[in-house]
Amino acid sequence: MLGKTAGGLFWMYRQLERAENTVRMIDTGQRIALTRLRGADDEWGSVLQSAGVYAGYMEKHGELRKDLAIDWMLRDRDNPSSIFSSIAQARMNARLVRTALTHEVWEAMNGCYMRAKDLLSRKINERDLPAVLSTMRQRTGLVRGATHGTMLRNDIYDFARIGTFIERSDNTARILDVKYYVLLPTTFAVGSRLDNVQWESILRSMGSEGGYRMIHGQEARPRDIAHFLILDRRMPRSLSFCAHKLRDNLGYIAKDYGQTPESFTLAEKLCRRFMSHDIDAIFDYGLHEYIEDILISLASLSRQIEIDYRFYE
Image (cartoon, rainbow, N blue to C red; front, side, top):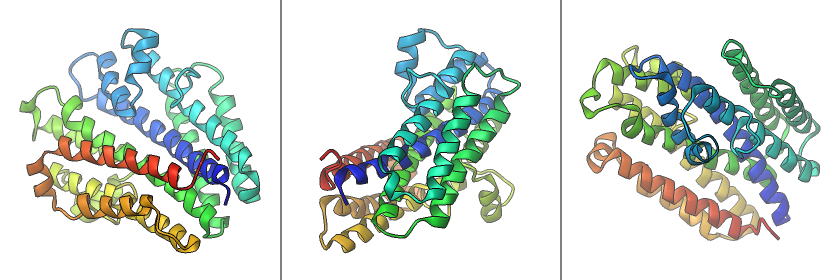
């Protein structure tokens, strides 16, 4: 496969995943704001930080305002990680690799873009926001469904999955990191009702509240939630699930191409180093430090994938 084709697939699905993650973050921001005693505008600083777009937002607007923060994450063309920008970039990459996609995947991707363009052509008021977020979540889900249902399990599919899981693991890690270092107003809130409500909001943001209840019951215990989101390989947004899928798909490509590139070695190290501990050891080490190390490893892995498969040649 040409490097440009591999890169186009990788970034198409990474940007599609980013759009869905941003939808979930906006929805979670709305929920978490209801648990805070301070002004609702201030709350959005944590959401922007979790999405990694705080600096760009402040450079443009200079003050925290809920309506501006939502618009920045939802549709602002100056924000390359806004929902609309991510979907537009995903479609552009889909056009570049059109011959590698099935008709169903292309139609779903194009339909997702056209619907986003229509819905996000104007600023969204708070009353209409839930319906818009729901539509965007459904549209990105249709592309993913068409991919699973119609694509051959070959290197094309593998690069699509690698882009998805790089982005998903990065998002899960950032949400977990911002939980204790931004969301909580003081360390005294740890273990409080406020703390538990925020953990529940994190579960909802990842669409994993139902799965958690099946395994751990109705009570939201921070230790169990952290274990679920970090180490439970049955949960498709957990760090462990994503890390092992990255290793597996890179392994399939390595086998198909008859070589073992550095990126596969890094993926194996990611699984061995970070996913072989229990949750108590992670908390003893420090959740923030653990997540920070994972984010550095994911960034290195992403860069190495681009090098190994010559995305820009």
